[in-house]
Length: 111
Length: 113
Image (cartoon, rainbow over all chains, first blue to last red; front, side, top):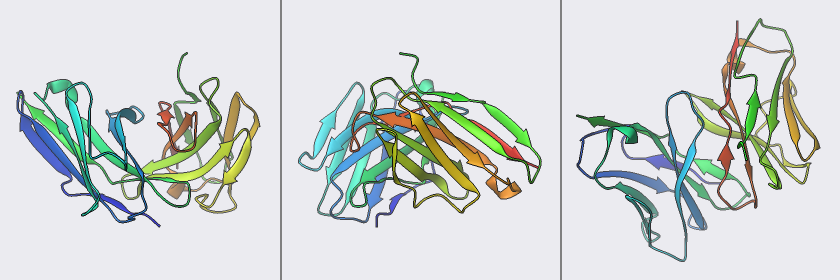
């Protein structure tokens, strides 16, 4: 099976700083990873994904890094804004045709 | 497209009652997923469908839970009888492929008293 965990339950950053949210996964066969953002009272919203044949992917203000050697991925948010405040989940796809979600990190942006 | 639509948004019921949650996936998406989210257990996959056929229901907690997808535009999740421990937010999601971005609905917050 697959288990996905995040290193910190809560991350507080100052507005304008960069945020880094980390995630570890257990199944070395996992080959597809997604980061989701969930705001209060809403469903998870796709941010960015990465497949195992890549180690980095960039979007608008976000970058995902994948280190398959240590089974770790991270989400970097540049110039964090108040609107980035939310819970961030990583999810991994590997074995069993299921997307396994981590427990989530609450990102708090301080003004 | 309006995205994934779920109804109702909130449901409060008493223990023992039947609960029906509804979902309309994004048009053209062949996969539909039902998730349950709680503080204790996070997001859990309950069941998913491909082209209206249930593929994996191993996440369904027990026989009190059932899900159907009678056509490509609709799915429901039923709990009968409901229990207080079923209280959670239930999400429906759809995707084009099984290994692909899943689009989530706004969820149904279920409270069983």
